[in-house]
Image (cartoon, rainbow, N blue to C red):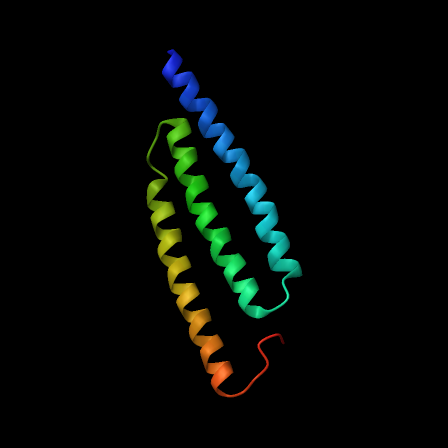
Length: 100
């Protein structure tokens, strides 16, 4: 393994460690979040971090077989965020409480 490959692997591991810290913060925000909108935002950022983690893992092991999973997770996350946003708009139009 050359010098450049060693640096790349170290940086990928560093990025994965940072994403692990982000996971903990996002889960904490989901559990302790003040309102439904904040919890939906935290769930969306959690799935985006998951997609990034899968991408970094693929780069680290040198295989790109898991990128399909990352793309599918990204698409499902986007659709879930749109559905949750529509739900929040519908609840707000009815005059409901978003923090319930």
